[in-house]
Amino acid sequence: MDPAPLDLGFGTVPARLSPHVGAFYRSLEERDAILKAFYEKGLASGDPCILVCPKDSRTGYLAAFKKSGLPAARALKSGQFRIVDAEEFYLRKGVFDPDRIIAATRLLVRDLKPGQTLRSAGDMSWTLLAGVAPEEAAAFEERLNREIFAHYPVAGLCLYDMRRFGFAWGKVGYDTHPHIVFGERFFENTRRLAA
Image 1 (spheres, rainbow, N blue to C red):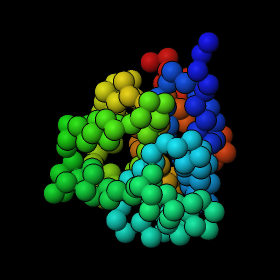
Image 2: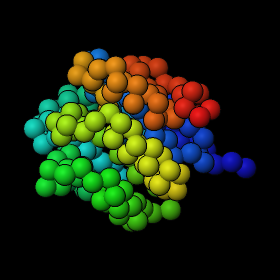
Image 3: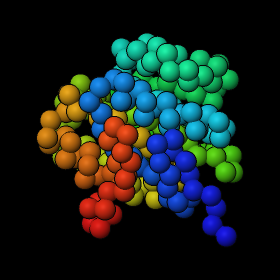
């Protein structure tokens, strides 16, 4: 018998998959609804949850979580939820080093208990702040697909604010994620899965 599907809050995937989801939004309300659903399911399941965001966005995310009723403050105190500065995680000393990021991600999953899924969301605006080219980001996202999502129980959610990202970035986000959430729609990226 197959294990139960993994509920991401905005959709489900077969349990055998570690979903890498591109989340596209046009307002903070859309973003916050996606994150609330994602983390609510994770916290209720006892999964460790991480948000990687720019340091200057941290307060805004916490306020949004509080407003939505997500128990992030309690989960932060217990250690089940962590907020990590994008500048430190992705750009240590201002340098984008995919090898270091992949290694750091592997460290995050090593302490998972059986049956747990690491639920990690990343605010992709760090790429704009660091001047990372869309092609570099696409290569990195593909490495995550091959080296992390293909081997570890991780549910990844990459957040793209379409008011800030242009067509080239939207294409990178779409082309490199096997699952997509856009507003309230969640679907398999059949174009990506066929590649």
